[in-house]
Length: 102
Image 1: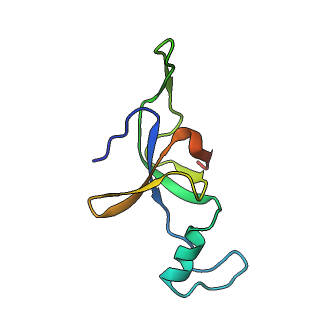
Image 2 (image 1 turned 90 degrees about the horizontal axis):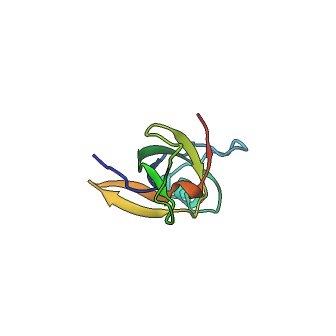
């Protein structure tokens, strides 16, 4: 079980479609992986999220707006890849999430 701290968010990248938006089939993992590394927004599922961010001067907690299971868009370059239990995840902060889709 993963438990994030602060305003950190752990994401799982959702599988890319097997064909492009223009209808071109992407026949192999390498082609889809090339798209994954381009600078574009990617759909991800929130796996773990911290309680929120603390204001340094007052110590007040600003709670996060995300919860596990939410589907979000993140910038293709936002976050760091991490390995946990043989599974690849993305570590980022709530500020780097572009949008919540559900």
